[in-house]
Length: 201
Image (cartoon, rainbow, N blue to C red):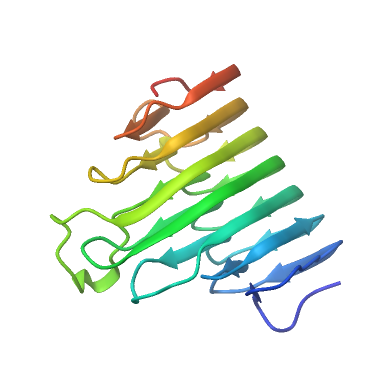
């Protein structure tokens, strides 16, 4: 089944999207502020920006995001894989209890990314850190191929660093020729369980 909407957006509800294919030039699935107890399983994403939580922290009094479970999904030919993104400089917020498990990446740029400096079009001051607290996030059993050398990029806020980040059995191979594959972590020391390929965090 192909989702003609191009993207699925979850907000303040329990959502299950079993066994669909989403082909889009935008976000495959975007999980916005206030989302709670969202379960996404057996989704195939092609093109676009993958599966994202956020962006968060752009507006005042955003509601927390919690209880997000993404499992048994395939993501291919996308600009991002699984991502959490928050704005710098602006408002506080909470994103917690977020779990990505059993994900296959195929020819994906930025397969695993937490970006707390998300600021398209340079709208705000990147030198001021994000005020959104990210905690209790896991990436488990994630494998496949990346078209960029940085297969894991976790950039956390310097003012409210990420807490309780877990990388468990991650194996992502860089298929290009522009340098060596690497994982990069900033303002966080994730817990590594099993293998992390490539290493670096």
